[in-house]
Image (cartoon, rainbow, N blue to C red):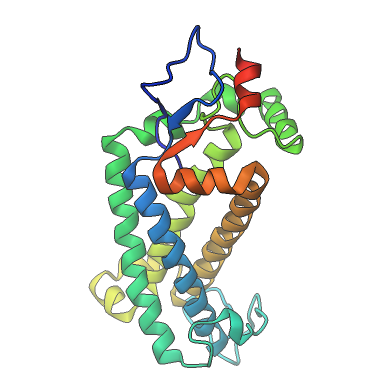
Length: 255
């Protein structure tokens, strides 16, 4: 996820073109911190969550779910090399999951506040109506198939599929995971009984939590694939330093 790009002072663009070897400030400090904290947090949460799922690998809808009820889905047993801890230990898995759930939730809150202050949401993630036109979506889809992920004239701008996926993840999947996770806690539902009504019952909360987490896993896989296709080292380096070098072919096309 990126913030509004700022051209490097030593290399100004002439006549709106992007000169070769131009560097742009692509990721601000708040974005980079949130990204790398999440990289660790999500791995631990997924691994510990799989251990918890292995304890009862059946998903239901409604208020209750037990061995004699009919599940809508029976997830496969997850191998130990994907779970945290590697050996089955439900108590430890729950402790790790709840600890990093706090990191995940408060990290999202801090990122949202920072993004409102620096106008990252307004500048980079705002979805305009014209971008949802079929012709616009089809053009962007063809550009992805051709492995062209950046507009040569605006190489750091988000395309519509990036905006939609990031908006769905930040404002949809992650909040859904947090709310459904809270609804699974007896202590939280005792204090906020309306949580169970929001998700349709405790068994439904577990199913919703699983679906949202699965959606996040799909997003991560697609994100990693696109990073590799776009050039893994420049992309990772920009998420460490904040600076991204505009490829020469982009600058030549923009000239």
